[in-house]
Image 1 (cartoon, rainbow, N blue to C red):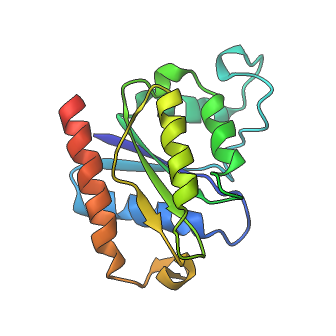
Image 2 (image 1 turned 30 degrees about the vertical axis):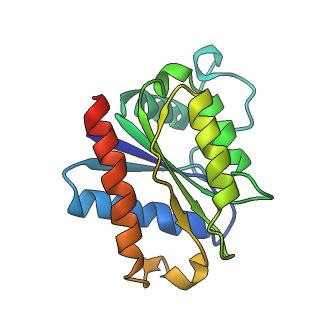
Image 3 (image 1 turned 90 degrees about the horizontal axis):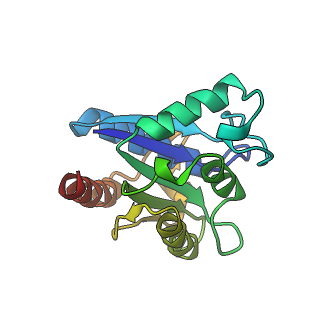
Amino acid sequence: MNILLLSSSVREDRNTHQLAKALEKRINSEYNHDAKLIDLKEAELQNLGYLYKKHPNPPEKMKEAYDAFMATDAFIFVSPEYNGSYSGALKNAVDHFPKSAYERKPIGVATVSTGAMGGMRAALQMQLLVLALKGIPSPEMLLTPKVSDKFKKGELVDTDFLKNIDHFLDHLFWLADRIS
């Protein structure tokens, strides 16, 4: 199964990207699936002016993202919590492409926060986004509280958190197997 991860923070020194890379690494090394990471900081998806299909001259990176979105079997949206919701970059990215990219596909939600709640409010908002895209949200969300304590220099240092990652992935892959 092909899994597309969207790392949706575009800030410098972003904690979200560390979690997205850890998920990609874990899927590719420990599960029998292929994970690909799209970093929205580098994807060149400008503020939505044209839907991909109506863009007069889409940039090459936009075409690559479109092809990846359309070909994937499942998604994992990874976002920080900004003011009680997910990142604007995530909303902008998913709006570039047709709902058929997400329709009937399992979509996992993973959030990060420097606080104790792990991005719960953003995760709940992302579940609603998944439903609006006609995707199938995995009921198990990956909340990452106190993210700065879990990663150092891009590496997961809180090995106990691997249980949370595996629990999240097991539920997502169980769902994906049932609906495929």
